[in-house]
Length: 95
Image (cartoon, rainbow, N blue to C red; front, side, top):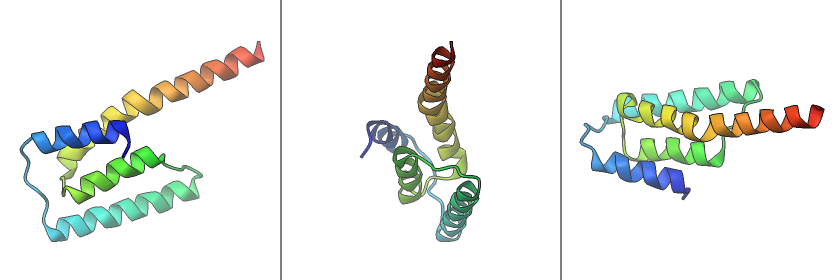
């Protein structure tokens, strides 16, 4: 498992929340599949780390109001810095 996913998983398990039921879990799985399909059409491919994070939320039956902040935090801590570094590298190679 990825380090960030392990860290987020431990934090998730440490907090109290009501696990979603089977019907909601089925809806969340469907939304995940639809999201992946939509991303693929747009040429967007999730990292294995982010896919593992989503899988963790499903395994733990975490409701969206609990999992959402983790997704936002992941984007801000992992994806945004990588994008900024890539943009800076591209800019410096153009000079």
